[in-house]
Length: 250
Length: 324
Image (cartoon, rainbow over all chains, first blue to last red):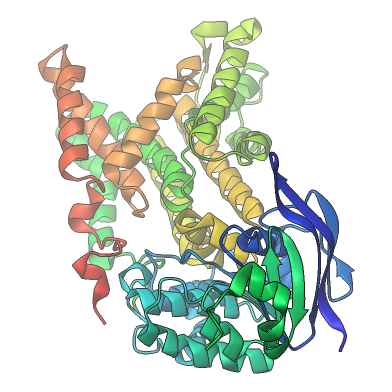
């Protein structure tokens, strides 16, 4: 397997705190790779650096053979690297359909168009409708995103990222704040995404991670202390000591 | 399809309004109130300029407190060209638009890298700089402003207030039509998306800065056109047009009219100027009463007057927006 994303010696400091500490990570093309770690391990900081919201102090990020360390976020999306957010970050005052259509529009030719009404561009909205069906929100097209239930908002959050047709999707705690019942609606979606594209998943919920991931990396204090299949991670003594504790003994 | 990003024009209303606007000069003449034709031109010009501010403020979420810079610059371009014996409107009006666009590009290039309060302050600072530049231009009148010996030469007789009124009306209608297309086109959706959630727009692949800058330039160019008209209206370009108070007045117009409503700028400009005209006739302390009226509007209609009549870009959580 060749790697689609490679992080080399990544460092990010906040004052005296080293949030990302000479981190190396390779995500293989096509795999679903999960990152787990205790609170404050630097998971979100890492996702921010990969997506382009934060720049690392040292090290480099290589995506699909290209060094993207200096590229702004929107350019990375253009290369096929999209993210979702831990704290829902959608267009709350817009309808579900508009949320998705805006994201579709971003890669459908130039948006410096000043004359033709965008609502007449059926290509944008057909694709947005198809996406809505895929994330299970096709009954809620005209609802304002901000008025959706939390679980639906989380689905839309992933849907908006998906609308950019990424080659690799960074999912930052997609299950955040979801009850067990709601999570069950997102699980199959992430599972099916994992079959089509490369997914880097940051997740708190252990059950989800062990079920979805091909490989897992354990992040502690800004470094990867272990990478392996779910079984390997379960058995890894260092990981158990540092993080898992008794949680997976059963 | 229901979309909060698409803004429809209500046909019958617009036609009625247009007819009224077209009929205004002959009706005013009939009643011997020619003075009001000139007042009408002023309303139209400010409707245009306030609408240009609404484009960036209401649709783009850019709280610019420096819009007067473009308005004033447009006026000065016309006055200065005329001072140098270039009275042609075909030259000076496009020149004003161009100067407005270039000025907005340069100011935007710096300001649009900041957010929030910093953006407000830095646009204000740039506008004040422009103000002091023109005040210090002694050869162009300094703080007295620069008078126009005549109105621009367009091929029709602009010295007639009625003709000038119709020219202002035609230009404003044309520009508003363009703005309406713009807002509903891809560009306008991106602009409104940026207003709603700039970070996410970046995260779905839009070069946000470029779109904001383009909108800023378009708004600056339109404001400069308004300035060119206003110089003709008053037979002068005055530094007070560039002063931050002017930016503030324009912002109040947009807020009173309705941020992000297509006719927000028009409604606000007309409301403010008509109120001013009426109150001034009754008392010298008109500003005091005006203050109370504006306060009441902001308190009871926080989304502006347009929210009374026009379809509201529905807010999340409100019952109106949630219909299937």
